Amino acid sequence: MDLFNYISIAFSFVYTAAALRLLGGISSATNKQSRYLVHLLFIVIQLISIITSFWGAWALRDLEGWKLYKFLIVLMDGALYYFIATVLVPENPNEIKSWKDYYYKNKHKLYYAILTFLVYIQLNAYVLTDQKLFHPAQFFHLIGLFPIYFGLKSKNHKVHVVISLYYLILVLTMMFTVASKPGWIDQL
Image 1 (cartoon, one colour):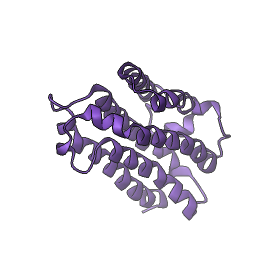
Image 2: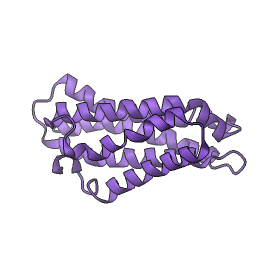
Image 3: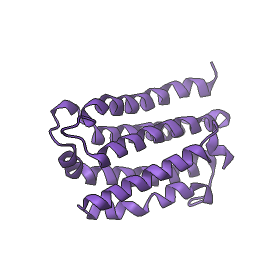
């Protein structure tokens, strides 16, 4: 077993845990009496993000000079996805009476987690692939920063619908363009 295969086992577990957390909440989040569109869209956005991130991790197969800090940086990706998944889907999702109330109660955690993730992506690219900070290849991640301010400040349903649709369009655009090939990160 080569080093990449060994390392990929670890980050696969973390990605899988995040995806399973989200999928485990789908049933109760889609319950007709309690569902909330914005919340559901963020679950879908995170699932797509996890898939494209895992798909892009193939680029790490040729990375040389693995050190513990690089391994920890790779694990941070999945760990941040898992944290976002725990914000979106609590331990006992069947106990949620209103996903709308739940979303607005936890929106600050969600948006700060997204902000942390987007900053992490810049550092990840710099440390693992020697990409310059704010490189044009990071365009999708950089434009993902804009809605965070409005998401944190607003309690308006329409604003949050627009934000969730913005992120959905962003991840779908990535999925069907730059992130459509395995290891897409090193093709940027």
